[in-house]
Image (cartoon, rainbow, N blue to C red; front, side, top):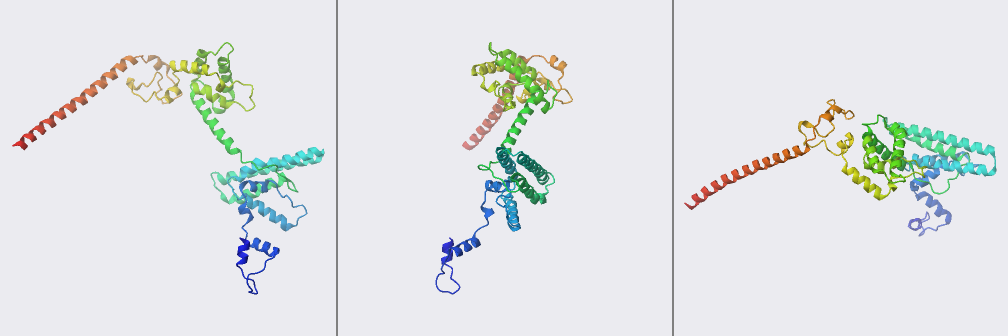
Length: 376
């Protein structure tokens, strides 16, 4: 492109196409070239920031100022994700400097690299506070230039006075995936809390730290027993705490730590044991208030007087309180009510059928009279 544009340009003297030297080509290319930062992707921009003032040893003030402006502009390549990418990669630069100091055996250099890492961490914390004000309820977007400077400050401390080196390709922000996993685990924890709320009075953190490890041990001792899985005892324990099959076989494994390697996982349980538990669980009646509500038992009108199930809610409307006297007083008359419902349906269809027959007879008589008049 540069050569084509040069060939179309006349020289100052006006004699044909201008002659071209290497210096003229480079000068012309610098004039027509786009801004370098606009061609930088998010990973290259992150590398420019976290490596700090690299290659500026003995440089003048103009070069130092140009490097600062370049790193600040690199933040705006994608300011929505640049802070997360800097947070993901800046410690790798500090770790490389610490390893070099450790190989040299210089204790002072090791302490200095640790101090630089500490300063970079503090700058990253300041960046988080500033970005929270920017994206939070105040929406103070005037702080965006300050965020760029704080991100550059993180790389300045991580790289040191002479700049650092980021080994390999910059990694993408792992916080996004971790935050998604955190949201999933919080949702599962709230479901367990909702199921166990009838028996356990604890908030979500207390349930996670206190109850779930003990309950998991109980189920593990019953289902992974050497003499065979104790299916009946496991289901009794599930009913006692209001848990269902998915809570035991799927959700409890989500709360294992990554370091727990020698632990039996319910997902790896023998398929025959799972089938036996499922078969017995489906054949058993469960009166857990949360499970009954989730299965939609309270939506039907089978029971008269508004009684939706064997568990009645107190007049105050609280789902956590159950009136045991009302539960004991509810009669078991499912068969009689089924017959009553069947009779009601039969009578309803009879009424509809009668209406249809009467309407048809009227139409027939009217149609016959019209036919006679037509014949006349």
